[in-house]
Image (tube, rainbow, N blue to C red; front, side):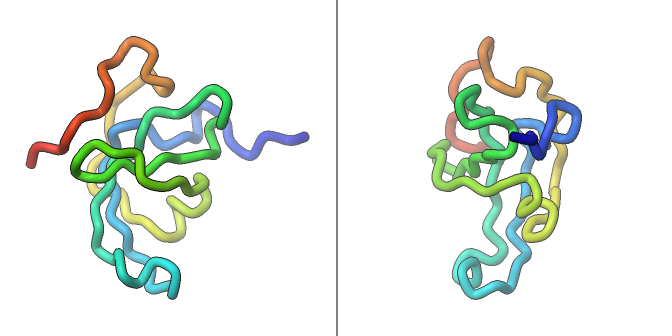
Length: 94
């Protein structure tokens, strides 16, 4: 099985993204801001968790969907993609 993503192409955790898609399934959330969550070793790097303002991991998308349905607002410099040595993501402070 071919992996569709690798460590270099994965969007860094804690990156802020805005939903810009007009697609029917996302229409009611257009304009929502999410943070990219830490990746799970069992899920792999193509399973991107979206974290809401309260710090809850709410839904998953793949790297391709991030590119096509979201705009990067602020790219994180986070290097610990699995969050092994990090505290859990908490509520977002503006």
